[in-house]
Length: 147
Image (cartoon, rainbow, N blue to C red; front, side):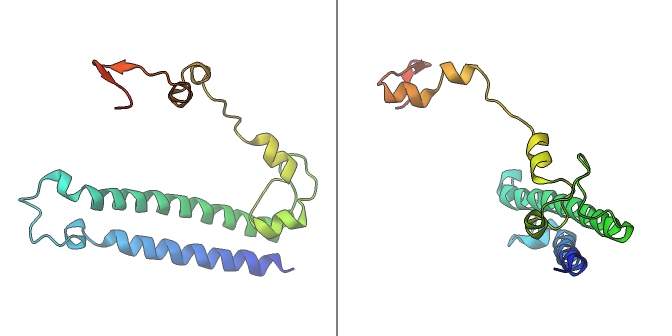
């Protein structure tokens, strides 16, 4: 298994995606709509286009972050430290490197370092779905919530 080729292929793939997103974002918003003029349009009329533009900006940022991770992995490969966990200094599992070629953590360290999100305690008490299952309802401004 040639990790260098896989990393370089992943890098090329991400760079092509970044180029495509950047080219799409260079097109003015007025040209992406079918409207002849943006002057007479209410701002809500272009909300969908604006949402898509913001989503593309977010995806571009994620792709650039992913490219940084791939570049770091290539540097580690050149330094001889590729495939070594940053936390425990043990070898990263080959199956994990197959799936995520630019990973820096072994499976156990990655699992231990994940953010442990717990639901707020209030949700244990006030789940509206549970209330509906029991046939209970509540009123908001004099109207039943599920009407």
